[in-house]
Amino acid sequence: MKKKVIAVALAACFAVSFAACGSKSGEAASAVSEAASAVSEAASEAASAVSEAASAVSEAVADVVVMSHEEYVAAPVDSLVCVETYVQAKQSWWQDTASVYCQSEDGAYFLYSMPCSEEEFNTDLAIGNKIRVTGYKSEWSGEVEITDATYEVIEGETFVAEPVDVTALLGTEELNAHQNELVSFTGLTVADKGDGAAFLYKWDGSGVQGDDLYFDVTDAAGNTYSFTVESYLCGADTEVYQTVENLKVGDVVDMTGFLYWYEGPNPHITSVTVK
Image (cartoon, rainbow, N blue to C red; front, side, top):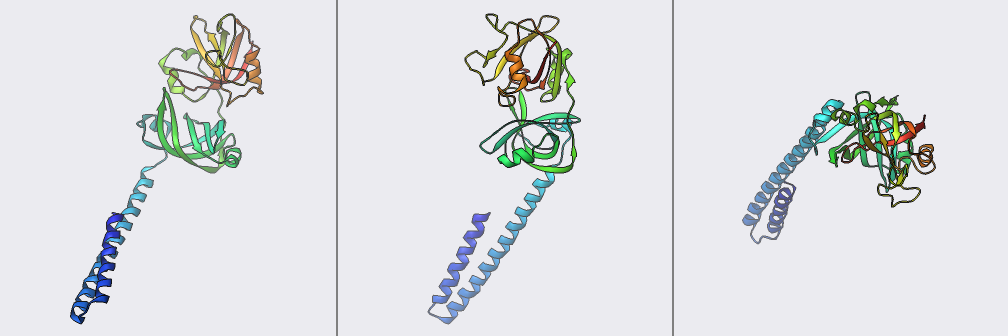
């Protein structure tokens, strides 16, 4: 529509120019009249275009209403979503984007690669801060997250989640309902990751200190699950990273972390206690 308005305006300008150069006064008067009409039409179409654009923006804003977590879960992938939630952990900041774990009383969210300056990352996204997030619901290898997001801080409210024990839900479909939440696991046994090792640097052991740590645990029924200390979230200088480096096969552990998903549950562990 914008191109159409410009074309009409150019035609009007051409008519005016022709009128100014006409050799006969009658022809000039007629041309001026036509030019005035064209200009009026262009102005009318321009006003209409502006009105339609404003209406479209208004409708778009009106469509973005704050959702409950239940409504967010029900929304289709790739749809526009808007939620109010609280910062729980800052996974990473890189090239003016932040990846953040958030949670409200009714459920959790993972914000992936959200535009954010380093200063905003350190201030706006303080743990417990409430933010309103608008973006697109996305899915990658089973992990549901919000991408292409913008946020605004909502002053005056804070919330820090307490971990929910989901040990009994390991191996069940019910576990997915807690995706991205702060959760805990209790009484699990460290398993052999290969050649008597209790952990590996990277999933295949090809890494070095400072890379992600991968370790396996078994439950009372003998089922084995893979857990991760994600180095962006908890680096080599953190207590949890160093605790996992000192684990031994057979250790019984309690753990806390965020229930990330990658082709199935892939908890990002933030605390390990050896019993």
